[in-house]
Length: 233
Image (cartoon, rainbow, N blue to C red; front, top):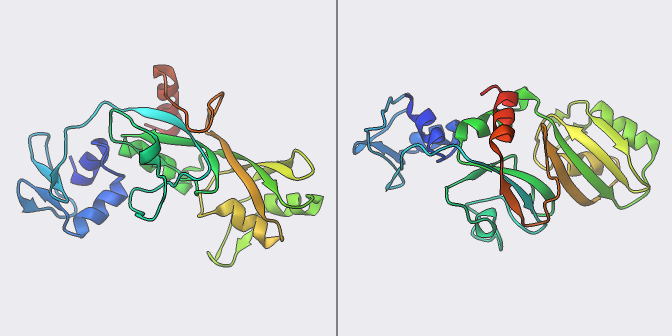
């Protein structure tokens, strides 16, 4: 098996991140520096940053309601509260599709790097649904233009057309099939709107349900099977 795939299946990181670690010379196989394309078996000793990688774990997936104020990071030493601080699980997990510190809602946590790769690839167009509150009254023109796609100068890209509908004087729901950095906040800024509250309520067929901020639960067997089927795994 290719080393990057092995690292992903061990829950270490995504394959893309594994390639980066290998290129930086931080991965060793049987005491020798690994290279891109290195092949390994489960009998090989793989170390990352000097720590031996465990064997492949049973695949676990959790739904977590990330509260406002919790940061999706493992590296920012300035973050006051991280996901790792908030969720204590029996396996090492990472997240698929981050939420910024000021946003809340559904976050998928898993030890399966292959699943993360599938969910994170924009070309796969997985749906993510949000409820949003802005600081001033919403106009019909704003909803129409948001749905058509918005040019974001700072990213030099135009967002994909999306499904959006107004739910109140200051609120709307929006379904995205891509995950640009702070995408909804950037889109709103183009039209002079400031996001005051942003909550993700759905990823594909998984919803946040009755979870409260800070709570999490493991997916049932049927839920996990449906999730994997939906992403082609």
